[in-house]
Length: 223
Image (tube, rainbow, N blue to C red; front, side, top):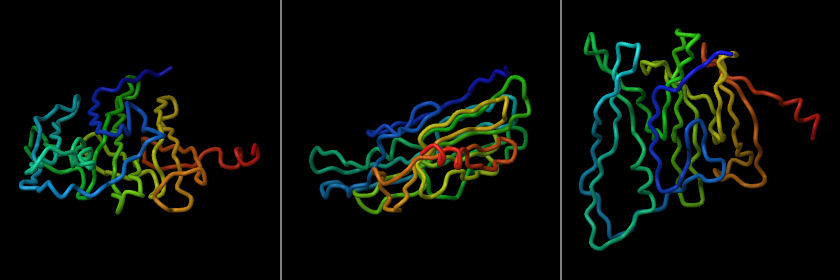
């Protein structure tokens, strides 16, 4: 059996726990609530953290995060503070040419990202991300976790899950060169998961990032 190891895991968990290594919480998603009136944002800039070398490549990666400073009239807690525990972007730099590029121009929050490595497949060139890319308009809506893939150098950043899907968990099987994942599906498109919604299983190839739906007819026949 092929062996693999995860070299790099950076997980930023907020007040509500969305994910752990190789999984997204299938019970809790987050909502946005307006900031208390007694808080005023006086500084809101993106800053870079110290870089990490992506081993066996010519790249280092800087994590980019919001550095928000608030002025408070009295002690209080803003329920949307959990967003600030996640990353806003990643900056990749070629250590030979000094060229830099960002992961994406989208407005996102990166919950976690991990590089996949298979000791028997040195050509494996895939990093997996758990991302929030759709932000609720009110407290009745939920922020779904999306699955993204890119090359290890931060190129070809590709969304794998659909807009109405919340990533539940995932697993990489080297022998198949596929990532398998399950989603909770918002069937009624109300941006909230409930007993009217469903769950489904999918796979995505680490070679071409092409997704396939799994066991659709088989599960229909069982129900």
